[in-house]
Structure formats: C-alpha cells, structure tokens
Image (tube, rainbow, N blue to C red; front, top):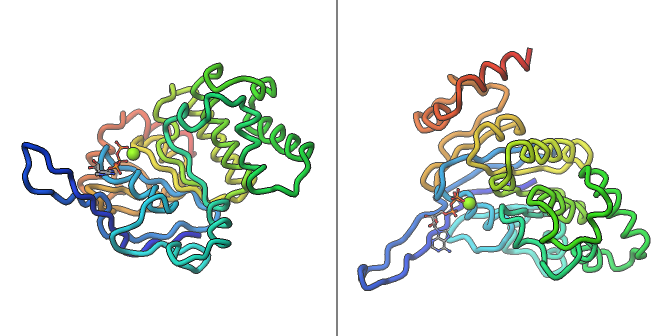
Length: 270
Ligand SMILES: Nc1ncnc2c1ncn2[C@@H]1O[C@H](COP(=O)(O)OP(=O)(O)OP(=O)(O)O)[C@@H](O)[C@H]1O
Ligand SMILES: [Mg+2]
C-alpha cells in the first residue's frame, strides 16, 4: 500500500544566545519499509526517536529532506491536484491529542458531517446520517453522543469518534500515532479491539505507532523498532517473545515489560 525508500528528515535547531551554531537533528534517518495490504504494522521506539515525524512525512504534512514515499505506484510529492484529493481521502492519520482534533464549537454530529460534506457532496443528508449512525454502532457508542459537544464526552469516547471520523472516508491506509497513550488501560483495550475489528471489516492497512510494546504485540502482524531516527528491527509478530528480537536495544525495550505478560500470552495462544 505504501512503500518508503531511504526516507530522511533533518531539522535545523534554532540559534539561541547559548548556541551560536545551528545544529542539525536527524529525526528520520534513511528509513525504508513497506506497509502491505490488510496488514497491521506496529512501530515502537522511545520518546524522540522520530515516530511522529515519520507519520507526518507519510501523510504529506511535511516534506522529506531525502527519500521517497510511493502510494498507488507514484511518489506522493509528484502527484497532481486531483490525485491529491484521492490521497487525502485514502490515507488518514489519527494523533494522540483527542481534544485538539475535534472542533470544540461543533457538536459531534457536525464534526462527523464535515468530511462527508467535503468529499461526498453527491450523497443525501439522510444517507450521510445513516452512515454516521452505522459507524457509531460499530464503535459501540450510544447515538446520543452525536448531539453532545467534545467537552462533554470522555477522552476514550473522543478517540473513538476520531477513528469514526477517519473511517467515514473509507481510507485504505490508517496511521495511528500514539492514539491510546492518554487513556486508561480499560479504554485502551476497547480501542485496540476496535482497530482489530476495523481491519477485518474494512480491509484497511494500518500503521500503529506506540511506545507501548505490549499493545503493539497484541495488535500487530509485524513490528518495526526505531532508535535515533533509524529502523533497527523489523520482524513478524508470530515470532515475538523475549528471545526473538536480535537487537540489543529491542531486548532492553522488552525487558521493561513484566515477564508475567509473556507467560500469560503463551498460555493464551495455546
Ligand atoms: N518541527 C521540528 N523542528 C525541530 N525539531 C523537531 C521538530 N519535530 C520534531 N523534532 C525533533 O525530532 C526528533 C523526533 O521527534 P518526534 O516527535 O518525531 O519523536 P517521537 O518518536 O514521536 O517522540 P514521542 O514518543 O515523544 O512522541 C526529536 O528530537 C524532536 O525534538
Ligand atoms: Mg510522537
């Protein structure tokens, strides 16, 4: 679905009275990978390793310093305006901050109508409302939520609304950047299950970015590990276990997970 070749993003740090030389930060450093059809691909790594920069590059919110991103056989920086609309519709991103992503002055129903009004002008209002209600049910939310404002719903509910909002455009690729980070464990589980269900129902390819290796292990078919802007590991999740990662860094990441988790997982998989 997406092919990334030698992707690199450098930022110049600002000059301050303490620093008289601009330093270059290699936020993403020569990364190559593919996101396959109907795959949930996990991306883990510690804070500041470049995960969100990669997400922004993938959806064309930022221009890479070097490298290419191929979607539908074309470099996403070479596509024309008409194809750009298709790209914007088919490749969706959801970020961690649930509150900022919904307009506080709009009721939930109006926030959900917005993408439909922009991209599906030919559809009738009744059809749009029907579609929204179907998704609200899919997200196990009550329809009464539609008439509320974002400040009157919980963080977990807001994140589910954000997922519904992205799904209304029937994306072929969904990039989730730390979408469960600010939620409690129980709500996290709800969202992870929703993502699993979504892949099965809509055949969406998903890049699931998280610093929580447990969520990624639960959800993903394949896992990539990033460190200091580079990809240090890319493995099939079937092999995951305390000994299956080869990189020292990944082992350190895993050693922070309670051993109980892996023994429970082995028992669960039997
Ligand atoms: N616009 C920018 N200008 C300068 N430096 C930036 C910019 N955006 C990100 N960086 C730097 O690039 C590096 C990677 O940041 P990024 O936000 O991609 O990390 P991350 O892996 O998403 O971290 P977290 O897990 O905390 O969200 C960091 O050192 C960050 O300070
Ligand atoms: Mg981030």
